[in-house]
Each structure stands twice: as structure tokens, then as C-alpha cells.
Image 1 (cartoon, rainbow, N blue to C red):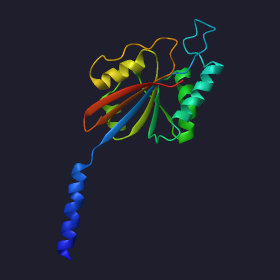
Image 2 (cartoon, one colour; image 1 turned 45 degrees about the horizontal axis):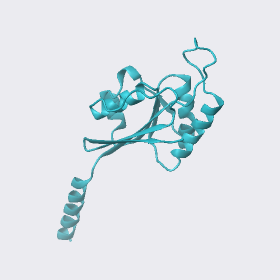
Image 3 (cartoon, rainbow, N blue to C red; image 1 turned 90 degrees about the vertical axis):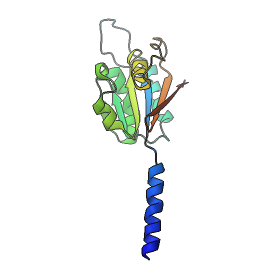
Image 4 (cartoon, rainbow, N blue to C red; image 1 turned 60 degrees about the horizontal axis):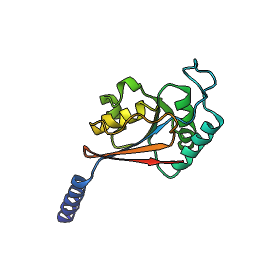
Length: 164
């Protein structure tokens, strides 16, 4: 019996040593925003923006998420809300001036995370994780990019999809 327990323990230990830690980040820019008042620095979404936010919820329907992050602006939080609500997750606010901090890395390690940002902060955040300037600022008319960044045992891979 001891021999069987030893073999079982050894097998479990061996399998555990092959386990990989996977962190997956899904980055999107906020949906279409109101542009009626050029002085409004914190606008809401347009009708099309609300439709796109609901569409993102459908995109993430079968993707289990552990956290949803947004900058502290109406347009990003409103974009994140349908997905966060459907997953019964709170929207966690991040500071775009302190992207991919040690605290953020520790809080998201091994998880699947949606991050909603802006035309400049979204590619900058992705670039920060990649450790290189691969992606440029998103064109102001583009609200459909989905950047997927995967970190497996410290190795980073990425892709970008256009979701209309």
C-alpha cells in the first residue's frame, strides 16, 4: 500500500511540475462615444456604442473571465458593463498612467482578464506587456479591435482581431 501511495504521489508531483501558469488578457477600446459637446471630457456612449458594448458581451459569452478592468471614464465603464454584468463581476478601475504595475500583474496572474481602455492606452498597455512597441495608437474611427495577449510561464504571445 505504501508503494502504491508513493507511486501516486510521485505521479501527481510529476504532473504538477509540467503544469503551466497561463494568464490571458483581452484588450478592447471603449465603444463609440458621444461627440456632441467637444468640451465634454467624460462623454457617454452613442446608441451605436451601447449596441457595440452589448456585442462585446456576446463575444465574451463563452470565455470565462476572472476580472474586468476599465479606466475611470463613463465610456470605458459603459463598454465594460454588459460583459461584467453577464459574468457577475465588478468593474475594477485601473490607472492608465500606471499600466501593468507589479500589483496588477500579481492580481491577474493565472487569470483571464478583460481590460477596457482608449485609442492610446489600449495599444500602449499591450506594448508594455510585450516589452516592445508593436502596436500604434488606434485610429479614432476604430472601436472594433480585440487584442489577445497570453503569458505562459513568462513567455508572451499576442494577436489582434477585428470584431465588427
